[in-house]
Structure formats: structure tokens, C-alpha cells
Image 1 (cartoon, rainbow, N blue to C red):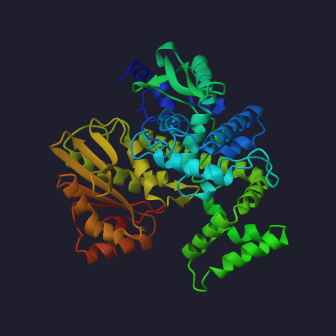
Image 2 (cartoon, one colour):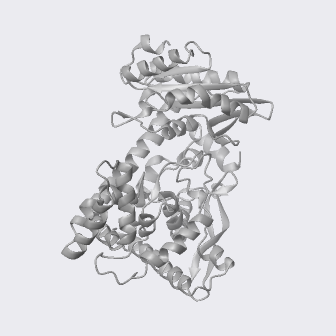
Length: 498
């Protein structure tokens, strides 16, 4: 624990999970500054949406978007020469993840995959297809980076956000430095050299910079304004394009073009086509008629106000689910209890599961799994919520460890000799039966351990009955390694006793 961590923990008297915990800053101060209160334990599922920069009322955000488009024009032009060396591709097309902002959805901590060779190839390929008229659009109001992810599955939301974060890194560093100089003590910051901050237009090189930034865990921290963040998908995204493809091309004012696309699409669509089949045909139609992208983007531009409302709501929901609810759970139920001691991995893991089960079922801990009255729907969110409550443990807690047979949710270990696997499942998971039958045994072999725990969370009577039926079928009722947790908003003790 470095000086900043020790000082903040002593100042707050609480378990450190979020930026404000570690640096002893009142949450209202960070809120007033406009930054999201990131977890310094694990990435949170938020992403920078370039459309929020494009459509912003803030001139500095609009300028950032213009810089992004200028860089893409540069990449398009150098790619068109056909003289790119491997060194040029590495320097101009490939970027490391900016892990210091603690955003995204990494499997453990804040280390994602970054923008590697696959992204560089997709970017290089798509530049020729969708960016030829950059700066001279006649249908859309402006140029948009998101076209990259509309045409190819090789560029997803995380790639898009990582790319944007790299291109506006200088702004984010200045933004964080200003907060650090105003609100943090000298022992909480450090002046550091940061690579690839600004792109020099004359030399075509990425230049470094020096900044005074919050420093903890041997690294600096980058803060991000909430009003450029979203969750799940960017406003302009491939999913919406494929889902609404018919509506997009049917709204094209050019009768001849609309008829051509309609004929292409319908002639390839079987009468018994599934939704997946329809999307596949739509994707081929878009490749044949890429002008559809411009009409889709224009519709998204015209609904820009909705983009800000939706993103703001998603960010608020994320803050409630992963910051406020977890904070309440740790502060009111877990901090200062046996949930934070040490011990053998199986006994300690089971004790924590049972302790958490008691808190969820009998002390209103179930609230952490609800947002605006609705239960979580993704197991990844369940896993992340549980990971946040494990902070301050002396045990080695690794999330989604993959030892060759697929990722297990958690491996709790003390060295190589003592390891326990913990899997978290939602009872509504359609693959619950297969998971219980095969998955843990495979993981135990791959991770060289015979210790495992499966935790099943249910939110309704029907989900509990389904889980019970599966356990009976597999003859697993009464197994000491399987724990059911009742997360219904109205608990029924008789159901949770299984």
C-alpha cells in the first residue's frame, strides 16, 4: 500500500473501492467537477461515445471530435498510397488500451486487450470503403468514426472507445491534472511521463507529455467526464442498423435506389428466414449499398437529443448499480465483519458466499442486484458486483481465469497449492443445466484443483423452481458445493432453504 492509499484509507475509515475512497475526496466534489467515480479495483462497463462529442454544446468537445476526424483523414490518405510499412501500421493504426481510466469491461482489474492487429486490419480495410468522402458528406451533417463498426464485426464498442480514448488522451490528462492540482494533496499525486499524447501533424509522430496526476497502485489515474460516457452501445451502432435495416432503406427519398435495395434484400430473404438470417442478408445488402450507412447516420444525428438523454440515464444507472449500491453493501453489512479476514481458500470462499447469502436474503443486500426496481439480467454484472465486494482480501482473487478450457468466474488462491473455483450463475440462464453438469468438472481439471463452489442467484419463484428441477434431475440437491441465493425483492424463507 503506497502513501496515497494509506492516507486515504485512514482519512475515510472505509474499504477502498472507488477513486474517492482511495484519495479521501468527498463524492460531491467529484460530482461537481463532472467526473465519473471509477472503481480502482475493476473496470466499470462504461465507454466514451464519439457521438456525444460530435453533438455536444461544448466547443471543446466539438474540437475533440474534429481532431478525431482529422486523424482518420490522415490514416485514409496514407493508406491510399499503398506504401505503409509494418512500422507505420504499428505507429499509426495500433494503440494500447488506456487502462488508467478504469473503464471498459476487462476480465480482471483494468487490463483489456487494447487495439491490436485485428483492429488495425479492420481499420485499414474499412478506410477505403466508408471514409472516401470524409469531410465532403452530402447526406449526413458531419463525419463519424462509428462508420467503422457499422460495416464490420471486427470493430466493436470497446475498440471504438479505446480508439477515441487514445485520440483524446491529451484532453483527459489535462482534465485530470486540473482536478489533481485543485483537490488532491502533494503526497497523492506524481508528475509522470505519458507516451503517445499528441499527434504532431508535421512529423507524423505521436509525442509524449508530462502531467501531474493522481497516483496509486504504482500507476496514475485518469478521470473521464460523465457527459461523454455511455453504456452498452454507442449511439451509432451496428446492432441498431441491422435491427432497423428495413426502416432505414425504406425512408431513402431516391425511388430508384430504394427499389434497388428492396429488390436485393427481398430476393435473398427466405420466407422462413430467422431473425439471424434477416440480419445476415441485411449486412450483405449494406456491403452492396454502403450509402445506407449515411441515411442511418443522418437519422441518428436528427435524434441527437435522445442520445444525450439515453446516455445520461445509462451512466446514472451504472453509478447506482456499481457505485452506490456496492458502497451501501460494503459500508452497512460487510465492512468490519468476518467478510474481510483470511483463511484457506475453500473455507474462506464458502464463508464469504454464506455471509453474502445471509446479507442478501435477510439484511436487504438484495438491493445491490436491482436498478430502478428491476433485477440485473447479465451474469457479467453479477460477477463484477461480487468482485467489488472482495476488495481488501489477503487472498489472490482472479476473475475469469482461462487455463485452456474456457474462463472460470473466479479462482481464489494462496500460491499454487490451495485453489478454489467460484462460479456465479443466474437461475434464468438457459444454459444452467449444461453448466452444472459439465462446466465445473472441466474447470477443476484445467485449474488443477478439486475445490469448487457454484452460486445460483434467483429473482422469482419461477426461477427458484427451475433451479430446483435442474438440481433434482442432475442429483445435485443437497450438494455442499452449490449455494442458492434468494434475491427476490420480497424474500420467501422457505424457498431459500434448499
